[in-house]
Length: 294
Image 1: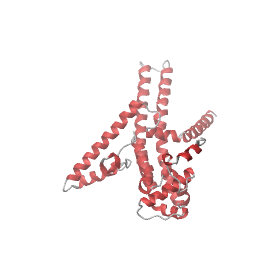
Image 2 (image 1 turned 90 degrees about the horizontal axis):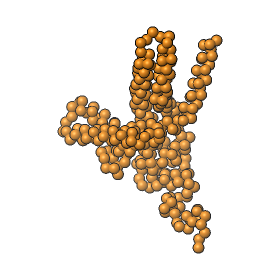
Image 3 (image 1 turned 135 degrees about the horizontal axis):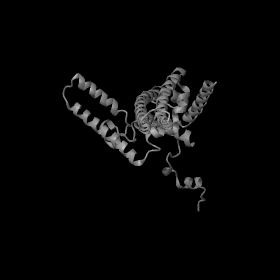
Image 4 (image 1 turned 180 degrees about the vertical axis):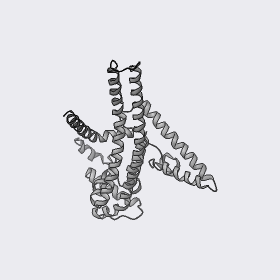
């Protein structure tokens, strides 16, 4: 009977914890992206480390490109460097190698920023505006494939977060239990043993959290590449559904078509109206603000 009660309690706690965890999905991702809950000094240190690693890889790539002939090992190293550098957002205005720049303070943040900004920079399609429309027209097997990739990423991120937050608490509870039972245990230094258990579990939990985080970054890179491919392939079907014509290689005209549609969906703006607040005529701005003209 006691075992049944324990099992029921664990299932209940697990269910409640699962609901809380999935409800906090947005905040967990923002934590790992470096947007929330970080001390500014620590976040700056992490960002500096990311940037220095970016500079190191950029410098190494430039040296390899200067060589007339590369060995097989150097070719493999070059491919790895290109793969790593391309995980950063495309920001040519920063004038770094390949137009890439680590604008976010964490590696996960840069990976997500890269694929989230891809469709807008490449085609003029703001991902937040067109994702839902695009999702409705893709085949079911493609949706299932993307859902699976997203589920893998979520699982790794959530589990990493669990180790980061709750494993040290679990270690503390074990250490406290050992210390509270010191009178019944034949140990010369129960306090020292409790502290050792706490430290070991804390270190192991941090290592597990970091390993899962690294796996999550790679999983999100794969998911992000799939999202980019979705825009590459199915934007033609979406354009047909929405009644616009686009070219295989987008020009400025195609990008403006998507931008106009995006503002139409987002702000009810017609194509003959100005797109940006600072370009709206003064009379219209006054009307929007409830100010009567003199």
